[in-house]
Image (cartoon, rainbow over the protein chains, first blue to last red):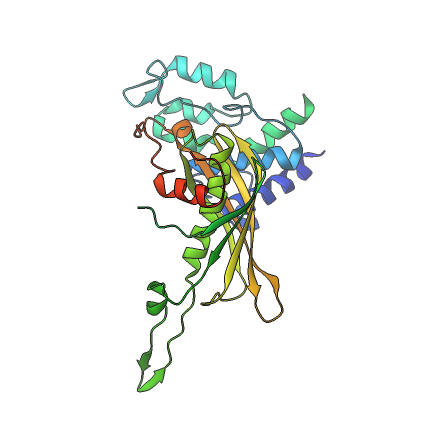
Length: 127
Length: 173
């Protein structure tokens, strides 16, 4: 499956899960900021990606799980270096470069873009 | 007391599919307000009792919610998290019987997604007519707390659900 084919299917998934228009689903669009995804939408997206690509996604594999509740990972509203290291290990499809400049925990959601999901699917299908 | 929008469960295939019905009657007070006789610009418009779409959706949410809850023996607090799609192609009026058929698409420790069809019994020809589709998403709320605490008791499935299950010859909670 080519990257473009994956993007087309991911776009369809996001149109259905979030009720957004195709033209809004650009690779750089953030799921929360641009596409207005809410917390429950992330589980819906996981279910739909599994079905669309016939893959099994474990809890916390595509999107982070319980980061904010772990005091080792979050201190004074910032994700600690230990937290960032753990996130990078768990989420190799995510680009943390910009987030590391200001690891505000409320901005974790901003790092998830349409392209993040495409990269995840690419890795998953190649595995 | 939870406001119930299904009268009887007819079929249950655990963790797969459930069918429930609701009889719509003119004795339901909300139908008198939806819509009453109105005078608009001096012209009288007769009362038009139509089952509000939001209550039809709630009926499907209760049908699908019981199906999802039953799959965990009602141990999970099953909360309607998202109405992914709701399409109704015809009004439902007093005298109609609504049939809700809910199917689980995906069941996970964190939640479930369901699709459902809505039919209405056509008394003139004695058959069911499909009038709508509703897709829902449920959260097992204890598994998605995000730091929020919820009461220990299962406040979702209360005594009125128990009465409904008994009336439908299904095991109690």
